[in-house]
Every structure is written in C-alpha cells, then in structure tokens.
Amino acid sequence: MNKWKIGFFLLAGIVAAGISAVILLLSSSPESVPLPDKGVVDVSDNVLTVKATKENLEGIANTYIKKAMKGGPLPVTMKVSDEVLLFSEMTMFSLTFPVIMHFDPVVREDGNLILKLSKMEIGELNVLPSTILKILKDSVQLPTWMTVRPKEEEIFFNLAEIPVTGNLQVRAKTFNLAEDEIILEIIIPKK
Image (cartoon, rainbow, N blue to C red):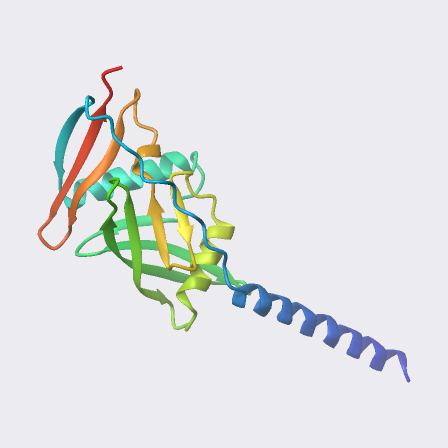
C-alpha cells in the first residue's frame, strides 16, 4: 500500500475518533448534583422584608454574577420579564451561537430559588437542554452559590451563600413575576 493511502486512512481515523469523542461527551448523561439541606432560620433573628421589582432583581443578580466572575468577561447575563432569561454564547467549531435559556422560578421552603428550564434557543440548532446545561456547568466558572443541575434541567441559587456585607443572609419569600411581586427577606442575626 502506498504511503499516501496509509496517511489518508490514518487521518480519517483520527478525525472519526475526534468526532466520536465530542458526540460521546455531549450525549453522556450528566450526574445529579445534590441540593443542600433546607436551612433553619433562628426565630430570634431580625427579619427585614424587602419588595423588589423585576428591574431591581435583574440589576442585583447581574451585579452579583459579575462580581463573582472577578472582573472577567461576563459569559452569563440575566434578564427578568415574565420569566427569567439567561443569555450566553456557545462556540463550536469556530462558530459562535447565541444561547437563550427561559426559566420559571420556584421558591423552595428554605427561601432559596430554583430556576426550572422551560425553553431553550441556540441559534437554529436542536440540542437537548440538559446537554447545554452540562456544557455551561463544565465550561463556565459560575459563583459557588449557583449550582447548575443538567439532569434536572434547573439552576439552583443558594441565596443564603450570596456574599452580602456583614453576616446578613437573603432568602426569597414570594417570586411572582406575572404580578411583579418579588419579596425578599434579609435576615439580620442578633448575635
């Protein structure tokens, strides 16, 4: 066999192995990340109730995300309308695609927030939402208080872990975007 044929088949094998590895990586089922136990708030602590608008929440969320990224480029931007939207970009094979994820917010009993994925747009591509969330989890250094859970198609916000000045903690009480009713509680420990 001539050396050009051997080189061609070797190169074709390497390309096929690379494409297979990418497909295997994207199609592997993501592991589930456990959520923290529901915390208990000390009833003797002082609680300040704050009513926020969608615009207030959007600004606060983007400020904390940007601060957690430590001045690097902001790969994720949040917009709050009748649903929560996360905007990002995905680069594959030197092409950049806009990614828009639509979420429905759910307040947990402990005051933390879960964003359940309802719809996803990635240019004209048809990709499983859990795959995009897995790529987001693996490729973007998100703040420690944001947990991407690809298998459940959700993002968990541990509001108690958001670094607020002093020893204050935040928790969500009501999160009704249709009525523009967002009520947060600021817990001020007596100790």
